[in-house]
Amino acid sequence: MGAGRLRVLACRGVAALGVAALAGACGGAPSSPLAVGQTPGRATPTVMPTAVPSLGTMSYGTFPATPDGLRALTVCEQWAALRGEYVTLIRTDTPYQLEQWFSGPQWAAAFVANSPLKTDPDYSAINAAFGVVSTASSASIGSARLLDKACAAAD
Picture 1 (spheres, one colour):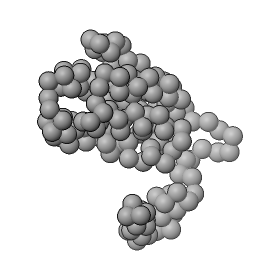
Picture 2: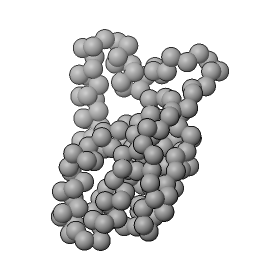
Picture 3: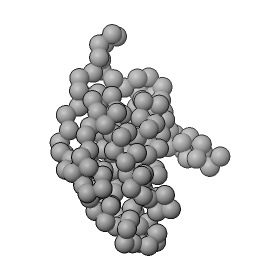
């Protein structure tokens, strides 16, 4: 109930920027500059994942160069950079320490990029797996593998 109110307030704040901004920010008109029938290109990853003991090598799916595709790729790239430390910390830290780490600056870009994916069904697997990975009570090697799998399957 409160989340819906926040969304309305956020959309009202955008109204001052103009009708086009309001429509794009609140899910009205599509924000893509593509013509009807035209498909977006592929987003190019900038972070190459490395192998992590107990997780293996991570790979990326084919992310389209759309706003949500780029956000999903950002989540996966941020995850690629954090997964080695993640494996170490879930084995040694307390849940409180993990929550502190998840709240730190290392995770900020991933949380920001993930937030709009909650309403995009194309990236529900990434969104759900990221939520499980970044919660101390569910942080595990199995959760990490789910996010690896979701990032590899994205398209």
